[in-house]
Amino acid sequence: MLKRLSACIGEYKKDTILSPTFIAMEVVMECLLPLMMSKLIDHLYGEDVLQIVKFGCILLAMAFLSLTFGVLSGMFSSKAAAGFAKNLRRDLFYRVQTFSFGDIDKFSTSSLVTRLTTDVTNVQNAFMMLIRIAVRAPFMFLFALAMSFSISWKLSLIFLAFIPLMLVVVFFLIRKVKPMFDRIFKKYDALNDSVQENVKGMRVVKSYNREQFETEKFDRRSEELRSDFTRVEKIMALTNPLMMFVMHTSTLLIAFLGATLIVRTFGGIDAAGVWHWGELSTGQLSSLFTYSAQILMSLMMVSMVFVMITMAGASAKRIAEVLDTDSSLTNPAHPVEEVANGDVEFCNVNFKYSKKAERNALQGIDFKIKSGETVGIIGGTGSGKSTLIQLIPRLYDATEGVVKVGGRDVKDYDMEALRNQVAVVLQKNVLFSGTIKENLRWGNETASDEELIRVCKLAQADEFIRSFPDGYDTVIDQGGANVSGGQKQRLCIARALLKKPKIMILDDSTSAVDTKTDALIRKAFREEIPDTTKFIIAQRVASVEGADKIIVMDGGRIDAVGTHEELMQSNRIYQEVYHSQTRIGGAQ
Image (tube, rainbow, N blue to C red; front, side):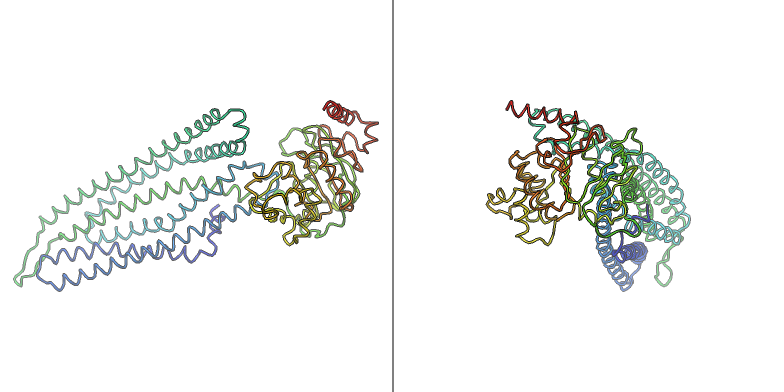
């Protein structure tokens, strides 16, 4: 995991190295300052003004250097941490883009969002602390301890006596809060899931007057999160008082014993009028106070680093789960780069969404479609219609059997080359923020305005687009909120047509348009793209009755294949669907 995360440092390696380098130099200055201060204090008892000025200037220079090194380390660490987070988000997002539908099913949308935002921020903060405080704390501890021993090894033993107590506090803290952070992040996912679900379904929530219920559900999850965070904060809140108690106790002991040493071994002024100290001087005792504070503060910083690393460890683990998930769909060693034609063949195909699933979503699927044919697929809800067509562009891989396109197994193709020749308009039509032109050009980035107009006319979208004040430059709100369901479907069909695919798949993609517009779209398909293989999944028989072949699905199996006339003569399911719809149409 660490190797995976450290790779995200990338081009910010120089900043990552420079930051702790300047921190080390800053610590050296900070640890030498008390020594210079002690010499200044001791010279105050004499009458050598030049020495006092000399040490005063040295102190000022060292303070300025310490400030400079601190500012530089802060600049480099900020740049390194921000760059690290940017690269980590990029790698995460890239990994998600490579996922198959099956891989995405393993993670909820809200969980992926949390990992890309909150978890990355936690790891970024921990990285910042690692290259700053994790360097500063041990360096300051060792340097200050060495300096204090050089002054008085007897008093320095007091620091060492308190270190085990500090380590016990840190160990207790880590052991207690680590499992709590794991639970907290899972509840974060649940809370984000609730928010996302509510925002997406706001119209339904309001139409059923469920605002109060949704608010109470959100409050419950928010309260659970607050409760867990409060427990963590209470435990962490114990750290500072305990550390301060240890610090003040050690300072009192040093003051008492240090004063005793000064009194017992007090020096004086010799015949030449020069002051001489005994075993310990006032300046040295003063510097020991500072070193004791630095030593204990460094231990406090270590405890802070461990807490942050513990929290970030849970986030890093969740990030690593995504980064370590290899796509279940991969290109072959020597992929085929070109799809010969729009032939589609299923050879005894079985499919299940999960290896643990008890039953197949598709069972024994066998059929062959020639290039340019129009194929209707009809069946009840859950019959496997959408699942079947998602195997053609290799959004999923068949569990058993072979799916062929252009006479080759879809697994032989380069996935990008295959999907460039298979245009899919899924049930859930999605438009992205931007203009209509920008959305359409997802199908072909280099398409001219004339090509855009042509495909929009085929999809019966040109007329309503021109009714907008800005026409094709009309800005689409996020998710296509400012266009109707039928308009969104037609824009998605136009976008797919712009790819000029060999295979076109419409997954119930005209359900929101009226029957007249539906008929016009089908007519345009027949006349304008006769060489393109067309799969039309529909609930309405009228949408598929003109197809060259109609596949009737039932319970994940093919119940029958034939033309409208053949199925009306031989297939009970097709007959029932047809008669139920004609009766309803007649009643209307």
